[in-house]
Image (tube, rainbow, N blue to C red; front, side, top):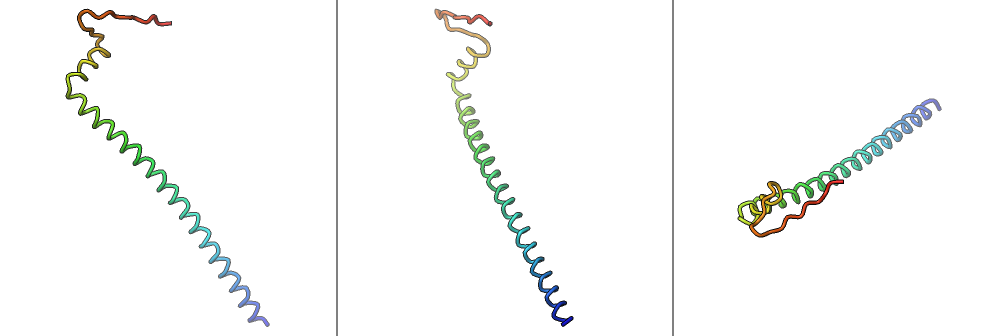
Length: 89
């Protein structure tokens, strides 16, 4: 009778330990999936930004882009154009 109690306790302990391991593995898997999803989103964002920068680089080599920058940043205008200045509130 004593041996059967010890076996029962041992089996119960082993089953509880196995359940603990399985649950902790599931939690780890869920965390890794979340990290993977975050990494995929970050990769997509960086890829889009990279494409945008490549487009800007290509545009920066054109005369139209240089003209646009001159107008926006330096306030240059073409001869014969009228300038409209917005009052700051």
